[in-house]
Length: 164
Image (cartoon, rainbow, N blue to C red; front, side, top):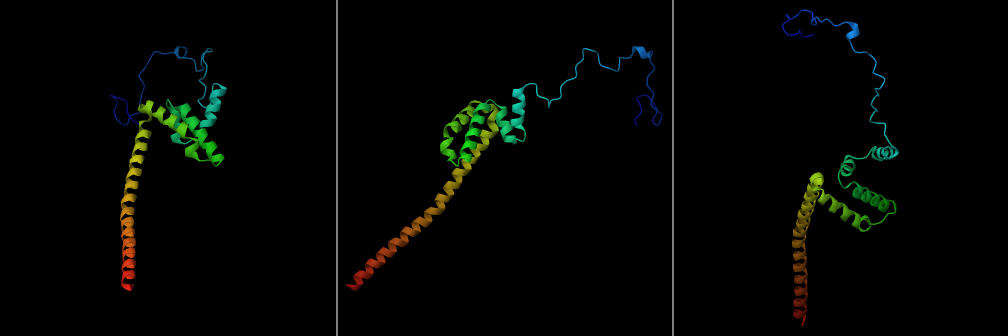
C-alpha cells in the first residue's frame, strides 16, 4: 500500500478530516428518474436483432466490408456467391455484374476500402508476374520443340534423298 503525499512511508494512510455528516452524503440508491442503460447485447428493434444475428460469427473481412459505404453492394455480391455455390453455377459468369458494382462502389469509397483495394492490386500484380514467368518458362520449351520437329523433318527429308 502506498503512502499519501506528505506521509512517512510505512505508516497507515489517513484521510483528510472533513466536516461531512452521513446525511450530507449522496443516497446509495439511484434517483427514481434514473434508468439503467441497456446492455449492448440487447437490440432496440427487430431490424437490429436480425442484423446482429446476421453478423454473429461473421469473418472480420465481411464485417469490415459491411462497415463501409458499400454494405448493400457487398451483401448483394455475397448472396450471388452463395447462390452460385448452392446451384453449382459458374461464379465468375453469374456474379460478374454484382462484382463490378461492388468494385465500382469500393473505388468510390476508396478512403475506407483502401486496404482491400491495395491488397487486390498487389495480388493482381503478383498474378501478372507469375503469368510472365510461366510464359518465359514455356517459350524455351516451345522453341526447343519447334527446333526438334524441324530437325526431324529435315533429317527425314535428307534420308529420303539419300535413298534416291
